[in-house]
Structures are given as structure tokens and as C-alpha cells.
Length: 84
Image 1 (cartoon, rainbow, N blue to C red):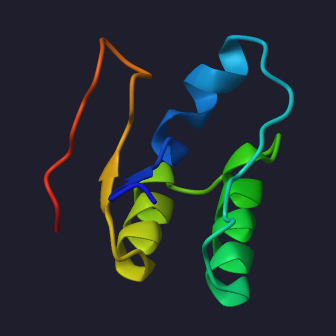
Image 2 (cartoon, rainbow, N blue to C red):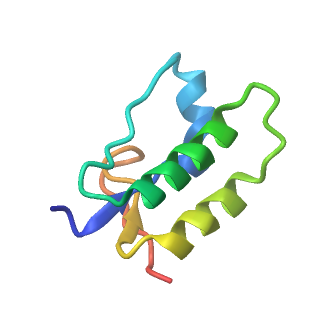
Image 3 (cartoon, one colour):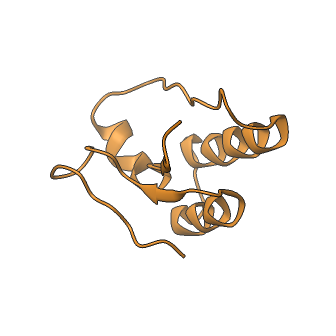
């Protein structure tokens, strides 16, 4: 089990710009309620007519996760964000 939660919701536009057209959200060790919420938040972020504030969606993830959020190796190597 990873102590950190990989969270790229605020990078969705950059990810879409790279040509990615699908993704997998790994919630194997999470409750059904947590998994449902995460999938819903990412679905909102990925909509073509996205009017959602991605930072607000990220704050919602921070409010439900027990782990520190990080971006893994996505941008300029490993980036750790401060825990709330």
C-alpha cells in the first residue's frame, strides 16, 4: 500500500493535451464510497465542456483522502505537495 495518493486532477488539461484519451483510476484498496467519489470528480474534470475549478476538485479529494497527495513522477521528476 502506498502512503501517498497520486493526484493529477489539476493537470487534466495538460494530460488531455498529450493525446491521452482514457485513464485508469486504481482504487483497489479503497471503500466503494471513496472510489465512487474519486471517479465522479475525475469525470467532472474530464468533461469536454469543463467549467469546474480543478483546484476546487483537488480540494475535495484532499478532504476525503487519508494520504498525502503527490504528483508522482508526472512533472519534472518527483513532486511532493505539502499535506493539509
